[in-house]
Image (cartoon, rainbow, N blue to C red; front, side, top):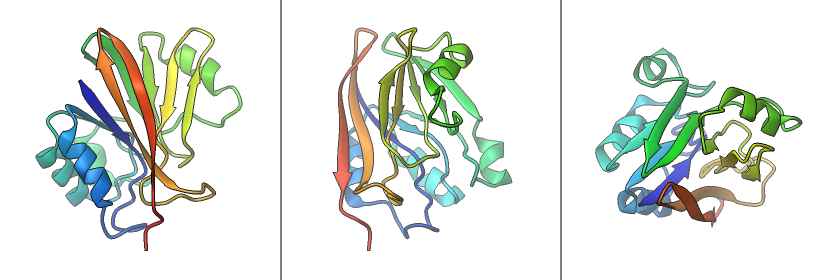
Length: 167
């Protein structure tokens, strides 16, 4: 099962649209994860129309319309993998310990907010992933998103994809 993960798209504030490479990944994925900061409902509508399965949450830049449609935290089991999604996890110091405490029933936690790609394991074995942002690189050299594969309850083949800086 193919998974694509994005966060912090900020359309149309940081970019007018999502890069074509990201849309191609969404179209090819079995599961799409969005860890918040959509900004506009129209982007959620497009993700819903193009995704086979969408697992998504709202972020701190999302207004009341998006918060009515999306949860703050999503928890699903896909192909035997227990997945949690949230926008914010707090500061980088102690993140893995906090995640262990907050998501003891998850195998993987996808989060956003910082725009900084992240891939670590907690002391309890929880994998924490932040796909960065496909539209706003902030202090990073590239805009990014993630793809992965779910097979037999395991997430593998995790790839951070770099995008050219939006114009």
